[in-house]
Image 1 (cartoon, rainbow, N blue to C red):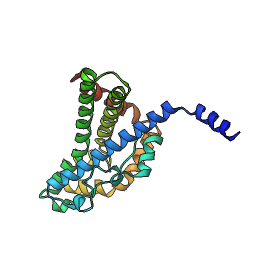
Image 2: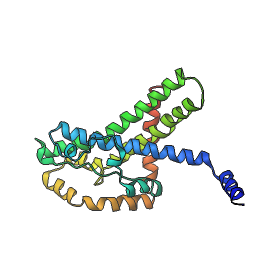
Image 3: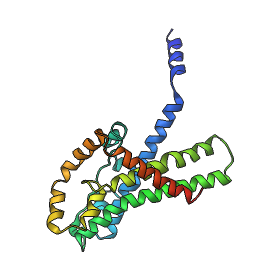
Image 4: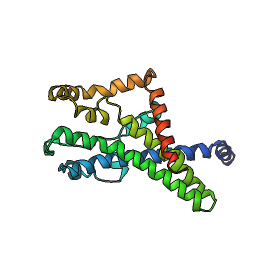
Length: 220
């Protein structure tokens, strides 16, 4: 009886959907890890050893993943990782250093998307057609690339604590910059509200489609 129930449960399981979900999670881990590691590398290149001393210059996703932020990517359509610790006092020009450190994350995501598309093109041209190469082709082209573009563009939105706010801040007077950073803690609530009421979905989706299409045109 138990064997029959297990067989029925096994037959009812949608392994294709489970596999697709697992690949999406893997792609999210990859995109977030590259994003956060490049923040740390940029800060380190500009003289700040904080991320290195806290072992955040790592491609181990477990050092960067915020599990609640990861869950929000599925619930709200966007999420976050653990912020890389940065001490602007190490920078010769703190505002400019913070802007470059912040910009490194989105730029790394666009480069990752470009690399994923390039890999898919090489597979398309030269790899034999089988389950493995077809799966890797689809993972690179239809999962990693659009997710990485989406993460990069979303982080350019100039609302704290997103990277775009720190890039924008370099153009602001010191007083306005301090005020902007003071309210950084409330930015995530603003983003959640904007997402909940649908004010960002269309704009972000159109931007992702435009950039993804432009990158595709470089190879296809």
